Length: 97
Image (cartoon, rainbow, N blue to C red; front, side, top):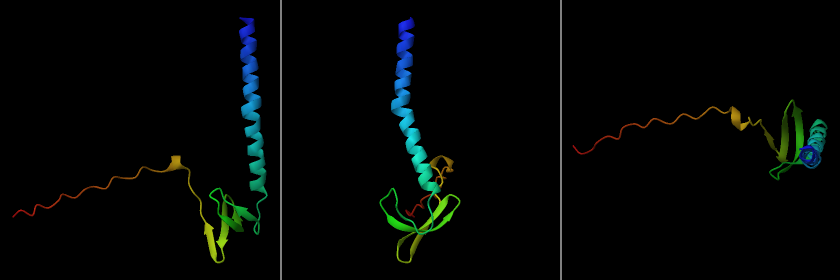
């Protein structure tokens, strides 16, 4: 009984070292990157678009991706969307008269 408890503790410690710690490090690095974004910085988006930050507001960026083309917007998380209403079908008129 005592040996199996030690093995479980060792497996939990190994999971912590392999999974949790690296994820926390990556998250801290990403948070630091976001905190240091300023207007004029050149960036590349996750979608592969290169651009220059024009303005930084709260949790939104305006990015110029081509001369004169500025993209700005905030995407809401998928879980907050309201379900779309199904369109009601109008009856098809009978033309057999």
